[in-house]
Image (cartoon, rainbow, N blue to C red):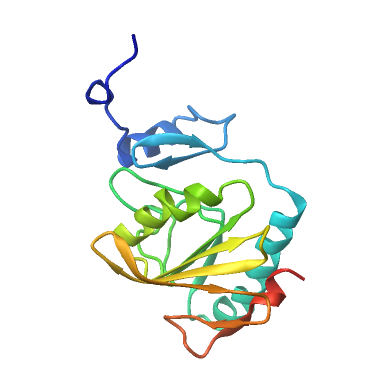
Amino acid sequence: MGLANEDIRPLKRVEYERLVELDYFAEERLELLEGTLVRMSPQRAAYAAIVQNLTRLLVLALASTGRAEVRVQLPFAATDDSEPEPDIAVVPVASYHAHHPATALLIVEVSDTTLKRDRTEKQTIYAQAQVPEYWVVDVANRSVERFVGPVDGRYASMSRLQEHASVKLEYFPDVELSVADLFR
């Protein structure tokens, strides 16, 4: 006999942050998604290389010019019950010493073992947080799924970009990245 869903109370983001401050999860890699603690997957070589390539490209295009901050695998205060740690978050320039950013201009998840979660739960979380652009980099298929236009907790538009394509950032239309460069 298991617990019914109504018997389970989701964890709030402020509660999770307090537990993190108390080093309660010091030995675990976790993120809070829709009130649930979710273990983060180990990083494979191809995944890590793509994160590194994206970081370099976005830092050169945005952070080095002072237009935005590029945060890598750091917490994003998305909603009251979610604090994911996206692979890349492009956020407004600000001081984040006292709190994690709650606004992002672009979020990227690189997916090799988490594709289903990134396309479903995380997509919903980022749309609810009004992130104007969300990418899922599909490692196996060497493509980028680009979601734009958050409306009522969903993205209005999705396009799949293959290696021969390039993508202009929604918030920074003068910045264009080659999809192939992500996989080099």
